[in-house]
Amino acid sequence: MKTQILVILIIGVLTSCQSFISKHHVSEKRRKKETEFVKTCRDQWTYSDLKEKIEIKLLGFQLKSDHQLWHPNFFIGATISGDTIGLIDYDFQGAVTIGDTIEFLPGESRNDTIDGKYTLGHYPLFVVSLKRKHNSILCSVKNVYYAEKK
Image (cartoon, rainbow, N blue to C red; front, side):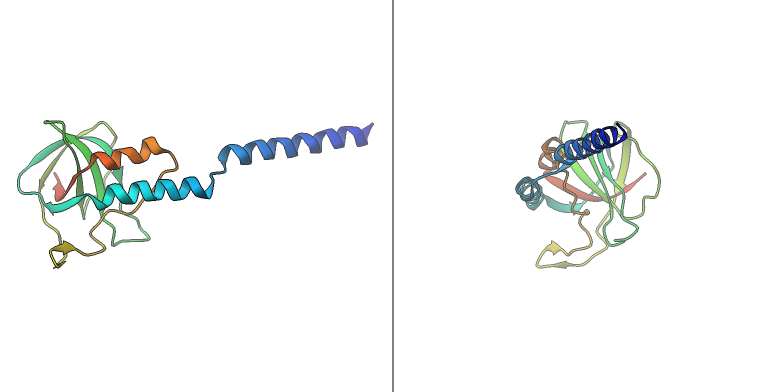
C-alpha cells in the first residue's frame, strides 16, 4: 500500500514538473524572432540632444544596470501631441511609476560621435521580452533624446 502511494506521488510530481516546464519553456525559434523584432525596431531610432523642456506620460522605464554602468537610464513616454519617444538620462537614481507625468530638461550626450553616430555606451540596454506585446512599445519609438529628468 505504501509503495502504491509513493508511486502515485512520484507520478504526480513528475506530471507537475512537466506541465510547469512546458508552460514556461520558450523555444529558441521564438527567442530569436523576438530578438530580431526588437533589433529591427531599435535600428530605426534616431538619437539627438533634447533642445527644449518636454513633458511625457511614462509608458516604460529601464533603470541603468549596476553591472553595466555604461548603459544609461531609459524612459519611454507619450508626449502631449501623442508621439512616443525615448529619453536617456545618465544621472537619474530615483523611482518612477508607469503612468506618471514626468518633465525633462534639455540634455546632451556625454559621448563623442564617430561619423555622426553616438558610440556604444550611450544607448539603452538591449532588453528583449519573450512576449510581443512588451516589445511592441519599442517600435512606437522613433526618436530618442538625451535629457535630464527634472
